[in-house]
Image (cartoon, rainbow, N blue to C red; front, side):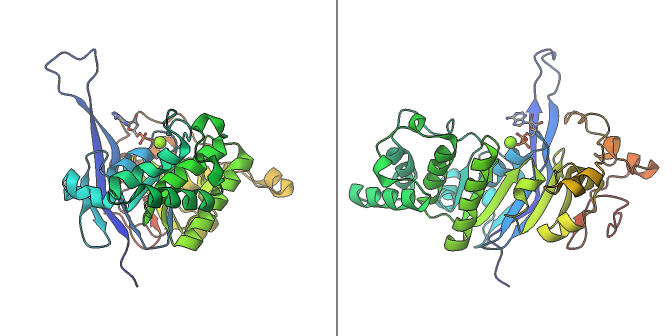
Length: 330
Ligand SMILES: Nc1ncnc2c1ncn2[C@@H]1O[C@H](COP(=O)(O)OP(=O)(O)O)[C@@H](O)[C@H]1O
Ligand SMILES: [Mg+2]
């Protein structure tokens, strides 16, 4: 087997929260936004990361590219732990890992032309490139993502949401990254446009051999694109398995509940299917439940779940639950 392109080991991100009402000598409260996330991603594979808003998806993505301080290890293909690098050393890897964001228009500078926006990473990462080479490269990548090269002098507001996301994808691809991190790239788009953007990402993966981390809050969005899927809840991994296995045989009660809420296109099946309700509200991430973090909303919770964390993940199909098939308690 080839070497993984990227491997995250026990990644944690903690925010210190200072509340205005706190007395000056009160220590800050801690929010564990990402709490022990690990994964291995082989070249050319796609990892889907799913979970409700606030579960730590964007924080994890930012930690991987050093936009936020994190603990643990993020091992790149060449054996380097990215979390140990200085900002200058990290620059080299930043051209190999590019990111696209949720709000396509907001992530583009409104005062720059599309050509300049897409060329910007080249100015940073390929300073030796001539203006002519840069322009050729920009035109080629525009064509690759389905934009017309003659739109190079237009401004972002002249484009639709779906086209703006294509501009974001072009800007990410222009430096020929190995890893593309997509943070909810289609959440802000209409359903029909979502399918087009996902189709484009699929094409790029096939044609360029791109490795992708695809973040979404909805399981149905990651289904077709992902080789492996990780489900997060309050900063922790609940379940991680191959996409086929996770969708055919979800083992964690949280995944089962999320999947039961995904509409099925066939109305006959849709009518008979049972939606598993999630009890109560999402607990505050500042005060997560003791024991298993999911237990306050879990239909299967027992006494053990109140005291013993269910973080122990084993086997190829990881499930952080005391009552899931392969789980072995620590
Ligand atoms: N800069 C920050 N300072 C303090 N808390 C933050 C910061 N960024 C995110 N958080 C908190 O961390 C948690 C995870 O946030 P985020 O990663 O944005 O979730 P998601 O992308 O899954 O919606 C949330 O509780 C959020 O409020
Ligand atoms: Mg987010």
